[in-house]
Length: 249
Image (cartoon, rainbow, N blue to C red; front, side, top):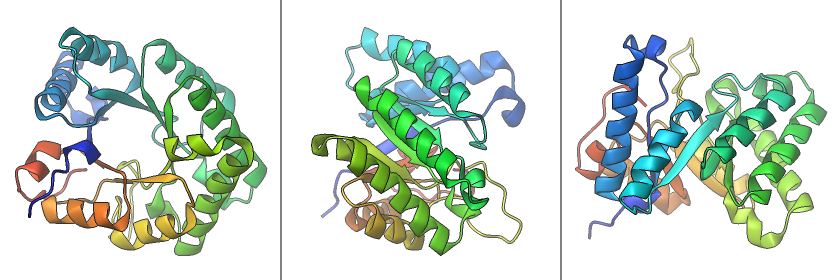
């Protein structure tokens, strides 16, 4: 029996006009179309860049839709300083965002600067949860080996479990990817079943999000059965309709 996957889908558009090779006006139209598609199909969330949060919230509020708006913080390298990440997240909160997807400083983590990473997870999560926002930490699995995926997932898990209330744990996610990381060996840039299994086994009571790499309805169902709460994709409608994605996020 076919199951509904709409309430697991974060429909996503995160390219800048320069990255897409289009104008700002055309980009705004793409974001508008994405939000409308979320409303029409009852996807759980529209994932967009911070500068479009106000427009998206206005569209959703006008039609009394239950669609949430999420945005990315420190995107896409994750190397911006904690102060800048907090300021960016606060602006998004002020604009009415519902969910904050931080890119963790995985470069600092790989270099052994674990204290920096712990501090940003603590402060970024605190800001989100204190404002009743869901918080996701993008760990960029394509930049990490399996052991590093285990270690960074446990780091996020332990910070949350040690500093927040039990009823808040499910509002913090470990998320796989930005979709913008460039690999040189043909390695997938988005979520894989193997990596999501590793995250699931080490995330404790936290939620998990598979971003990118989900190519069709069957893959989406497999991810959900694995324990994934959210799936980020730029082709949500195509997946729901039973199509296959070639390339893209």
